[in-house]
Length: 137
Image (cartoon, rainbow, N blue to C red):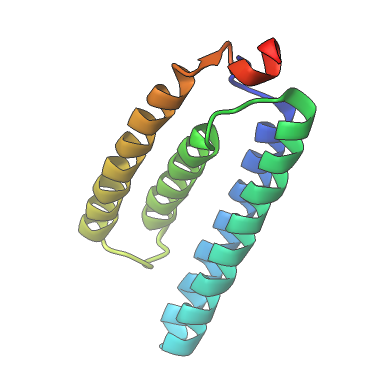
């Protein structure tokens, strides 16, 4: 199974851009004291990230026939969001405290670990990432 693919790279670039823009917009909204703007930024960011993952994941399924229940996309999103969050904190964008970022990363990490378990269980049902039914039917 291919681990790093062209579509995953495209998703990573788009996720990086969206995350940096989100952190910047969130910093501006918090600086202005706009809770409505903060919530709106968060909802728009969630929708854009969801559709980016869905779009690139569907394209990858068509291109490479990879059946991995989205774990690689979840891992890339986790690394980018947590990394950009810490970078934003150390650049002076006070969107979150260091403690809240660490707690959030730990909670998300637990969810990522659960996803890893499901990924490994699903991976055991495939042959090199291909569904057995696709090979033997």
